[in-house]
Amino acid sequence: MPGSISDILPSAAALLGFPGAADPLGLRDRIGEVPRVAVVLLDGLGYHLLPELTQDAPLLASVLAGDTGELAELSCTFPSTTPTSLVSLGTGAAPGEHGVLGFTVNVPGTDRVLTHIFWGDDPAPTAWQPVPTWFQRLRAAGVDSRAVLPELFIGSGLTESAYRGAEFLSVARGEDYGQRLAAELASPGLVYGYTAALDHAAHVSGIGSEHWHAAATKVDALLRQLVDALPDDAVLLVTADHGGLNVPESARIDLDADPVLAAGIRVVAGEPRVRYLHTEPGATADVLAAWTERLAGRALVQSREQAVASGVFGPMRDDHLARIGDVVVTCTGDTAILATAHEPPQTAQLVGFHGGLTPVETAIPLITLR
Image (cartoon, rainbow, N blue to C red; front, side, top):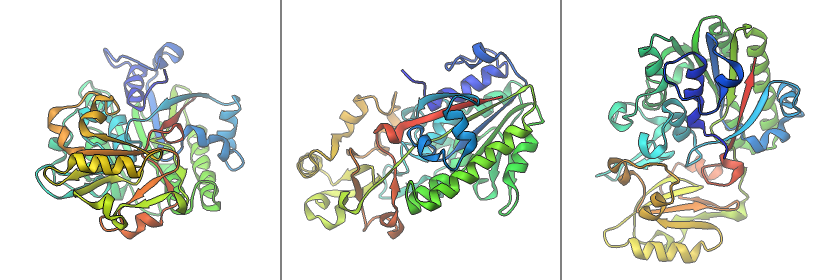
């Protein structure tokens, strides 16, 4: 069984000599203890997308060929979406424990939908996401930890949920991000970095597009900058939060354009590859039946109880259950379910998507560089 994104920081902590760190990925056994570890997450760099990047990314091509570093395959958590994955990385916990259960979720007791990437301080991050992060644990043990992030991210609810306990180092728009991140490699402890360039290009223009290949070149240059600055006693761990796939127009279903699919639904959350449907009182069985019939062969349609029992969310806290829809719809193949009356129009204009359980969405790399 491959490891998980949730295993990365526990193993990084073991490399740094954190007392009692479990090292589920066995990094300390292979490398030994080191005084400095960098973890860099490349948003959207799915494991199965690596071969498509090699023409534009010489360092990643060298990794894939086995000539540079070590490459392993891990999996992200479910849904395979950025907010869920980032908090799984930061806490080392499953989504059912940390509670950031999708790109958007219903705030229980209301009709409000919380979009995690635009979340401020309502709900309060420490209440919404109660699990301590590995940045907090390291700091409590006297190990320095820093997160070098675009200034836009600083102070957001998602940043606090995923990275609280880290020293936040803000990078202004137009500033050389790679230079700022590379400078932090000289200091002991854990340093974390993140870039969304590849994911943004996949969403807007599609995987394999000219825009996407140009983003791959930029990401590869960032990695080269970090490798060139890496001290002899440091380790660089490169990973991702999910992969993705392009969804053709013929595979898109708009639930708001289909009266049968729209019937009985009170709140729509999730995202196009994984939908959380919160139903009107007494309507759950009818919604389950209608969606099961309409999406036969195109999606797995489950009740909340069935989805939780399947184990995809990991252990589930009772107080997080209501954040999941009464009905959970997980797309298979290349299907996507739009909700044009419930979401910004930009969502329907995207080309690349993720969130589901297919390997191209869930498999992520772990690249170890020294």
